[in-house]
Image 1 (spheres, rainbow, N blue to C red):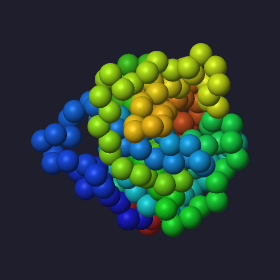
Image 2: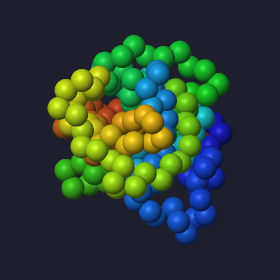
Image 3: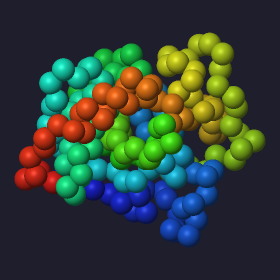
Length: 182
């Protein structure tokens, strides 16, 4: 798998500015634009060889070997109730860190395409809508206004429920061949 270290992601300013929590990586799921704060992102890798794990829900695509670590991979589109998109040359996996039960967890999320890193001022972030969004609002940290449209900013600490985290831990315990490491 090819990888892009976060500091090399398109549109990201110099490494000294990368700690600004106003910056968000935008990506596509179907026709919708979503964003995750860059502080939660470890890296972006090309979609590649994945080991499926039996008896996992459909939104868990499998696990990858990331430099010797077993990393579960979640299909965000399926997690949000949509059909899985076909894998294209733009499909990639965003490796994220999130907090669950006081511990830092690592998972990959499959997205249709990565767009760019945008700075969204706090004044341009609206609270999540009470209704009308395609995903449950507890996943949404806010609605970022970018030019004349909104970007859905995800709360990575809440995208997965406690039950989902247990399944991710189970998937991470599955044996993975080491010949496909990144």
